[in-house]
Length: 371
Ligand SMILES: NC(=O)c1ccc[n+]([C@@H]2O[C@H](COP(=O)([O-])OP(=O)(O)OC[C@H]3O[C@@H](n4cnc5c(N)ncnc54)[C@H](OP(=O)(O)O)[C@@H]3O)[C@@H](O)[C@H]2O)c1
Image (tube, rainbow, N blue to C red; front, side, top):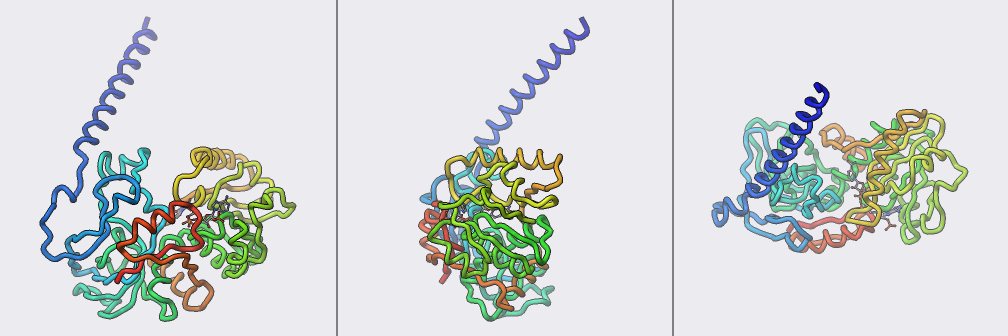
């Protein structure tokens, strides 16, 4: 009798929670708005920026006048000279899974881009590390614009003099992802054998060079047209995935840095050494491609199953910090890392640039020049 009551009330509680949850989502969906609708027509000191008021394909992007930011006492105003785009910018499509974070019906943040390089045009009164005219690069939301305001103690550093603005702007997200994946998650050590799956893309071209800078033996996996490129940036061996499947090789690796996730847990485990690590950094080039959901499920499965074996399968989200940005600037300064730029577009061609990136076959980075 008592059990029946417990089951009945549990059922009612679940039903009520579901109805309330659904109502909350429904209300959040219809209340969801953004600054496009709040501030329409009220720009006092304009600058040009890429804006998306709605979710959708790159066609929703517009180059518009928005309010030019004003630095506070701890910030720099940077005149952006170049920016670069990343798979992350394709959240303009508004994937439903992450809409509770992005905004249910409309994107909360209407600005786009993160990576930038430019010139300091104003500094807050507490800023001592930078001065007017300094050439800098870093990461800041809304970087696809003429200006950004950034906190001086965050992820902004001096641009190495031997790098162009376009090269420096291609670095932040992609190179930090490669560095933190290899060093912090992969525990990379000199003399190790490292395999990089997806070696020819934005992250992969940095990963090959960073792995080499640690004194490792690097094997890059890419398609036929990118074999020479991957070899030219330092890979000791290159596997053309259209001709050979790397999991069939007799070679064993200490570290797999996997940007594609197109092999199972068992397949990758077979080519890892006893205490090897597989860093699961991505699920293939930018944009939607067949089997993405399966890849995601496969990575989750690998993460769980690796708890019970000697090899580790790890995933992560890269985080900006000044120390790592400084390290990357040093790698460029010393010539150990040179960005690979595939294509350069103008700010008013950002939609075209994203359409290209979305095809998933960029060779290095796609850069936006801001004039
Ligand atoms: N964990 C994080 O914090 C983090 C941060 C940034 C990015 N990511 C993820 O990392 C992945 C790569 O990002 P990205 O910026 O490098 O993307 P991207 O620039 O769009 O990568 C494109 C590259 O992927 C290669 N590729 C596609 N299918 C492949 C396959 N089956 N085998 C080997 N290479 C293949 C393509 O080479 P071909 O043209 O030769 O096919 C192309 O060179 C994405 O899934 C992204 O979401 C994760």
